Image: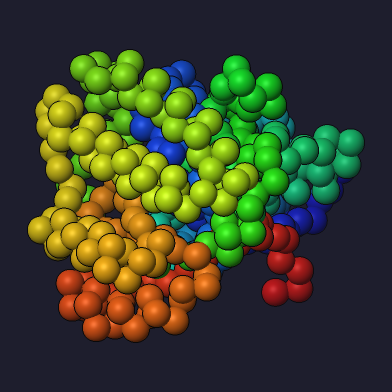
Length: 346
């Protein structure tokens, strides 16, 4: 082995919020439909890996300073899949330490940020050990995808596309790419405030929901819908069409939950206050003529989306109208971010 001493890498990577949703997968974490998201600024995972040569390999994992056996299987599977591209995994013991700037079960995809940060650390360590074996950003995205599909989009800042479309030659099912247009300024300073309706663990996991798409009666129609909406959203981002964005974002969010309710077995993750918040958002948009909209991930919480210039008016409205409908009056405020970064001397 070239190194007998421990090596360390530490990276920070963001979560992201999808506007066109990824729902359903095939093979090894490949999407059945394309998706488009933007990376967040404040909701990030920070991961440090200390790598020590060991013929037996292996790893330990600590989250927020505590060992979490429940994540062992997921990380073990990820490392096994990544070993072909990162041979150092086979003969190094990896001490993995991770933390989030946001709590679990609050409508922010922690697996996206965590697996993206993990992929960057591993790629960095592989390059330290064998400098000629460096990975470009698309390979890091592909690695992150092996741990969590949506993590493929968290290796960049700004707006990103994951999933193959014949109309976009650079797109791929194996890795994400930045959207191939110049994004209008209105969408370069976009906000995402997460309205916490319920923070309990979901009764049906996202992985289980993805699996239910395999034999879903609307599978073919959904794939066509997502394909069309992806191309439409990219054009919307280029032209700054806020009205088009609102219509598409809300349709995608409701379509996602409609797929859950029409699967076999069927289920819903929405709560009564989820629907009340949607009504309040649409009423505010109509009466105040402010381009605020919503999206949702696979959970009950609502993501409030709006341009930066309306921040003051929306903060006041959130305080008086939306917080009373949130669990413990809780809202997590965030906005579009610049992407992952290596952490030095920290």
